[in-house]
Image 1 (tube, rainbow, N blue to C red):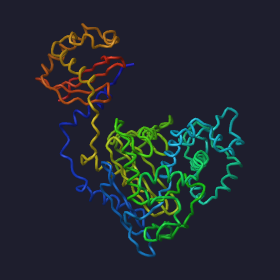
Image 2 (image 1 turned 45 degrees about the horizontal axis):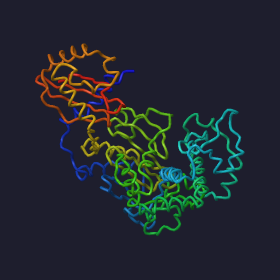
Image 3 (image 1 turned 120 degrees about the vertical axis):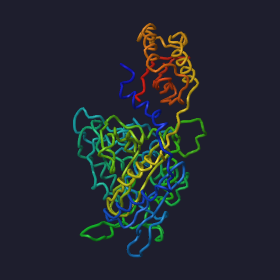
Image 4 (image 1 turned 90 degrees about the vertical axis):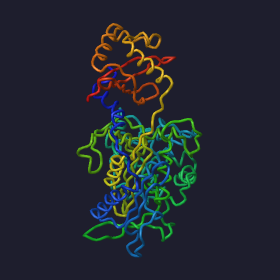
Length: 501
């Protein structure tokens, strides 16, 4: 199989071309009015009583704003300390709690769920060849359970005793497990029961002890009845051209799928912690959960989808390759890089969060109107930051192996022969293309662009690969180098292309 297509080469070389074209970046303060306008328009269109939104950048809450009212009766304005239920954005906390228990040896992702929830042992599966549900299947929504919005939202108040009876009664399956993605609140409620049984404490207590308290999220939790009136964002629905309060739901057995309440100040700590897991590095691991475990949450299962980006730019932007990972929808976006996102819809509340780990930036928004998830303004804000030059990628370091190979490649181009690469080529290199053929190729390139005395900084695409650009007498020469998994590392592939003017 060939290493790269022409399209792949173009995409990999894009960072080099951008180096000379990007305008000076704006500041977040400069584009704040644009972000405010996006959320103001959404608030008006969606009839949202109150909302708070924020941008987390470089480990801190870099911009935050509350708009509207948290309580229409008392006319209390939304602040950064107003507490909103985040609905299904709770699922990320549940997923990380499962992974922490795995790290601590309390369970395995490939355990059958019934090992931790005995009431599931008598479930009747849809076909004789159906696999039994694993913990992993519930995390990724591939347990064969039916999509249960909005039914699942109203199960929040279910008691643990009644949930036990519900599990023991079994379920009608939508399909055989592990055959397709289908979003299941019930499945995440089962994960809450697994967490409780594996940890020996109530789900909410475990999440508080393992995640919330270590992160200093003292205003977050599940029992909304204890929220101080001064900070309580009451939930409303918009119906018959008027707002009416939704019933307040107590903490119950479905809390693991959507019961958490947070303030913007608290939630920003969670977002900053997650983003701090990237990139992989040698620093001390001081968080409540290992960085590698946080990054594991971004691994989507193998039911991929092609989707439009959320927001105004979605119709014209590159399609995303998306999948459901562990408590997150993950997608590769050709402008924003790796994205992790999740919405929250709940009686009285709507929310959205999107993370861009490649840039260390996250955007979130919380509202107090039923199912009013501000996903479009969140993504549009991310696109605005990208256009303003605020999404600076974390530079991949140039490893000594890549630097040494590049120096030898430059010497080979200058000499017009592969002799400077003696001892540095992998065993496949000359089998794929002879030394004589390479000499002819180098001569052809030199005739077209001449000598190349200088080079742009390397653009590594990993520890063993890089894109490069040579500045030549009559133009520019782009290329890619790829090293083989040998010790020492040797060159397995090399590509050149004359850069278009």
